[in-house]
Image (cartoon, rainbow, N blue to C red; front, side, top):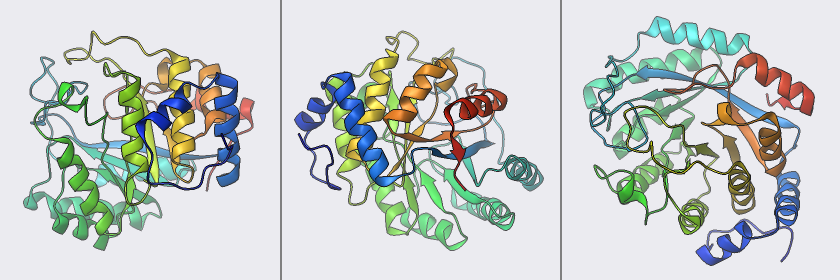
Amino acid sequence: MAVIDMLRHDWKIEEAKELFELPMNDLLFKSHTVFRENFDPNKIQVSTLLNIKEGGCTENCGYCSQNVHNNKDVRKTELIEIQQVKESAQRAKKAGLTRLCMGAAWRNPKDKDMPHIKEIIKTVKGMGLEACMTLGMVTQEQANELKEVGLDYFNHNLDTSREHYPNVVTTRTYDDRLRTLDYVRNAGLNVCCGGIVGLGENLDDRASMLCTLANLPEHPHSVPINMLVKLDGTQMLDCKEVDHLDFVRMIAVARIMLPESHVRLSAGRGEMSESTQAMCFFAGANSIFYGDKLLTTDNVSQEDDMALFGKLGLQIEK
């Protein structure tokens, strides 16, 4: 097998499975070689997250504590005030970060929400930061509006494979997800799209999800790979724990199949040792979320991240 694969959009599930099944040293050699061909392996893109609307989502994603179908009492809020956005953006800039990612808990934004959403984007951009949003499903018209006011990135994850998807969420379809990605890409926005490991999926599902990502018309600019964080009241509490070496394999195969994408080590880092994180960075992860909390889950502390970066000689990408 050649060490370097060209940028491809014709991956087969069996090919992806062959990568997963390589001896670990061979897989890491291959993924790290691809990594060095496309990136400085000692630079890491760092973003921070801001929850701009909590709770009350009508979707039934089995891993999420923000929907109305779970049995956890999560507060429901309206869209965040602009002053709070300014304060979060100021903290991000002070920390030397370049991108603020914002998430809203709902199925899709209503047209009445768009003026305030656009004002949030303008505020972040006006402070010299890149802006990323995850808003659920959007129409082509809404995606165009977001682009017009300066949104840089739009996140919409696949979560898992098409085959396993009905076991995770039933209130929307896999094609709904892909349709939103089409609208976002058509609008000229950078796509951020990945998934979650630990939802009860098997190796075929992990390979299938990565094939779907790699076979999109354009590879996502950013590919977040999350490890399930089990939250009280959600439907995924009984899922088998993810072997951390299997998670490293997921990062490595993602790097090989999506050679020019930023592969983001996302949720679940708080449950990983420094050694596991270091293996992920070597395997090809070159992006993280920075800050003590993600949208609904705890994260590695900022101090611990800076200490680990120092040990590994990693520098924040500007």
